[in-house]
Image (cartoon, rainbow, N blue to C red):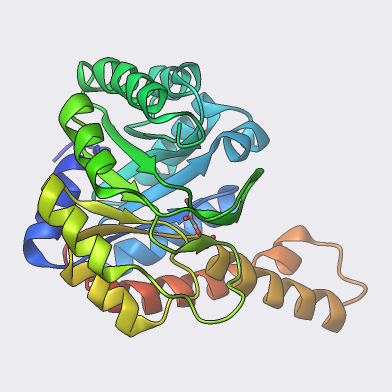
Length: 288
Ligand code: 13P
């Protein structure tokens, strides 16, 4: 094993698809998040995908800072599980290229706002660049609703014929077909399009990705996994758990000024969500 076990997501997801579990993607925003996610996933022996949005990377000082921070943390804290650093929802080829050049091991090109032909052409350009460097690519069809970082969208279901065309013409490693899930907090109970999920998976034959993984009931998560979903993205659940603890700390310790004492305890909230989600995703103990 390398000193730093950074991987792309292709093999991780193929294994998960075959063994019927899902690899979690947890989005990270700063060092608190990186350490909470890596420490907990190491404890659980689950492979993990660290999701970083374009603006999340900018906040942390750019792609290079993000990759170096993660690598240094892995080396100095004996993290041995497979870890992928994945760019979440990049809208352009240039953004993907920059992240790849600065050490990301996987990218999501989300050109789903473009007409199909343009989406496919952009995705193909990203795949050609990424695959020649050993980097994996996810793309999206349809529109995942809600709010993710600065991306706001109305839901729109993926069309199965378009999914097949996308996979055939681009050779992507995994596909995120929008089928009713939403980023952020759901209004009402989520209702995923399982019939379409099954049809799309049978048709395209590559692992599917479920965005908006927070707030989806466990039975729906398990069903999605049984129908070929091998990567599930979770962000909002961790944010909510962290901020709840932060509010309590500030309320209970109004004179505290040490940032470690105010923001540090929230890490336990993130860890609790991770443990709970990985149990449902079936990824615990799958690090090898
Ligand atoms: P949630 O914030 O709804 O968990 O979605 C995360 C996500 O899909 C990241 O791409």
